Length: 560
Image (tube, rainbow, N blue to C red; front, top):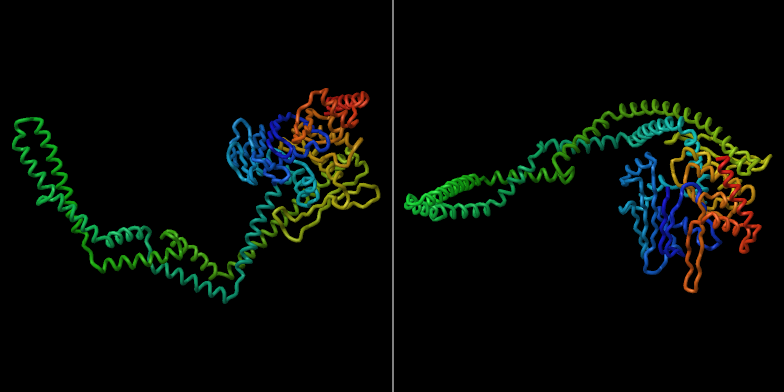
């Protein structure tokens, strides 16, 4: 659930910090107070597009911070799979905007807007005009039917998707492998040439490293000989260190019998002499081994050239060159058995297509069954929302070809007047009617929807009176299972609040600043009275507001 919203230096807001409660959170305020800024700022923090009119031009950065508290284990698991630390179930999302650039963070880690949108889709669902417009799209309508009957539909839909991917893969292969005889001969010739070139090299794994080591030694032989010879002379026993150590040993030997401590020192020098002697002998042997023939150098160089040329074309290591060769061998085998391979693919296509048709038929049957139940439930919801004579139905058609979700196209159709034909939603309903239909559908999914927080914006467009009361009752029903935030200008909806917030604007000569504050029961009644009566609140409007609050409280106690 959304526990806290902090906004700083955004549009008319200097700084706002508000805690939201469980249940139905209602936000009201006078026209122009900045109600839309609250929802827009939440959308901004969740990766939405930055609107120029929201961000101030002064030096201070704009900041929006959201604190969510999540308890659903499935949701927490999904967040962890995204790499989001969910310690104590708290998810902290923030966005800072300065000089046209913004920085998004989740729990302190910098993330992209796409990552925020993906994570926030598990936590919060914002229903504004754009969400209502989704209801007009066939793919969204189909997803609602699938969600409605997901217990039986989801397993079959998964089988359809898996089968379709196999079918599409075979179709792709058949299309890609349809080549002329001339093209096939050319490809065979080219592959044979590459394979023969690699085979002729008779590569052995690791030989390039050994050759490079030898080549490096050969090309630097002169410098190596000069350095090693010099070291040998300096440590030798003619005019080098060995001779000096020998003289020192003889001097100490002549007097070491007079002092035991000197004997130990003399023994240490003897060990040094032994080590130096071994070193000098090893260096001499190394110098003897450095001799090589010019022919050996040329062969090493030529072999390295062959290997490096193959590396430049087929891979940067012998292992990759050989792997490339094996892959080309497989392609060559397929080309040489082209007709047989195509016939086998066609047989596989026939079998999988038959399986796919069967699964799609099963999926269509289930969707038709649940589509009828879905339509019946929508009709009941619409009756509750003062669409008393509305005739809603779900119509299915078959798409020309298979898709990952089968062969079904769906259309929600409705007739709002008796005797009128049913037509697609976009040809019949207004924006306000569409928002009510969406509310009814959302009520149907309230028990199973795992998204904790729902925000309704512009839900009261074009309604009043009894319809407004019905909308309020639906929202209260949804709020039994979810945290709901709703901005409204209707008293019927405001009176249903579990927690009521007032959005106000303080105007001075220098600036206008928006604030948001939770209301006490008495303050909530006065706010409802303001909505009912306008600028002047009389005792009658106050009593009407109090009565509305009491009626809503009684409704929630008796019905919900």
